[in-house]
Amino acid sequence: MNLRPLAQALLAAAFIVGTPLAASATKPAAPAAKGPDLAKAAATFKANCAACHGLGKADGKKMGPSFAAVADKYSAKDVDKLAKKIRAGGAGSFGSIPMPPMAQIPEAEAKALAHYALSFKGK
Image (cartoon, rainbow, N blue to C red; front, top):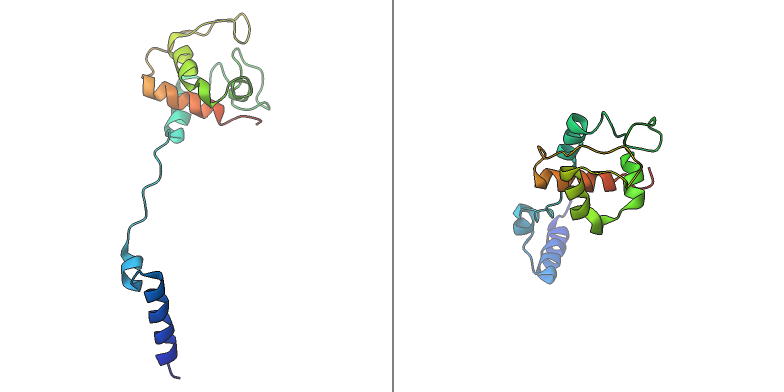
């Protein structure tokens, strides 16, 4: 079997592309865009929110709205507003039962939790 034509074709392709074959194989992948840590937000939800809030529409009725209901009412532009509501508490957005302040949740985690809630849109 003659491998010379194959080698020449590979060399020509590498030359045309402008990147040596060995160099392209060793380049690290570009880092992914840094977004909220939804896994950590899920743990925060479980530790702080699950007693009063459900995740999806199929969850049973609890004191507070499900994250799906929150996602249906708010959008990504409301993340800061939701994070403030999480930390400060309040009442009236989804009924008369007040939400206690969750000041123990750091602001960055509250924002991640808001992103997590919004991820349940339509679920």
